[in-house]
Length: 262
Image 1 (tube, one colour):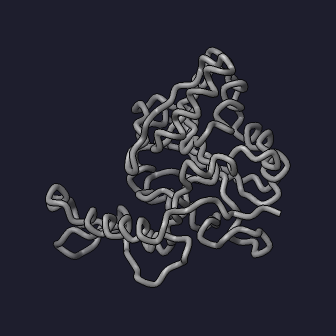
Image 2 (cartoon, rainbow, N blue to C red):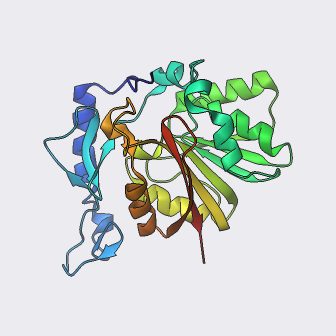
């Protein structure tokens, strides 16, 4: 049985992040923005925050909401043991995920929220030396673990990329596929990140999400760490990505694939 009990921030740090999130909505630099709510034009002449902060929220959430969904707390570097657990192959069937991506070799693939590189090195083997995996994470400890693993295995087609909470720092129009495994629901600024992901994708490029099925109450994961297909589709529509396929052959997760068009 899967149990999403990986290490979380302390209550004090969580509150600090919530306060920071509130303050981040009102910097002077945003005063000139068009009045948008999650990318949708509204009639108010004043700029609107995309994110709502609620005092009452899930204990494992941040208290910040986006399009009706609470954003979950992010897993810290102390969760590497969870990412690299030996049961993961049976529980998540990574080979099925890789196959669903339709990689032929030579692609540029971004592993966004790569962590310690569980999927990164599977992708590197799949695309071959003519391709490249951009392993993106915002935590130095994760990137250090990735770098050590790449050196130990002699892998040369992996590049570590330090992202930020709002920008994965991917090359514009230079990525074929972006993979996010159990990551998207923890993004502090999903609108900003996915807007940048869309800009990084080549025409016809795809964003592949692997998330625990919110539609299935039998999946033993905390609700704030699940995503429904409906919610994912709503959030990707806002940033201009269209759903093209859903794969439901994993034990507990969806594979939901979106495409950049036009």
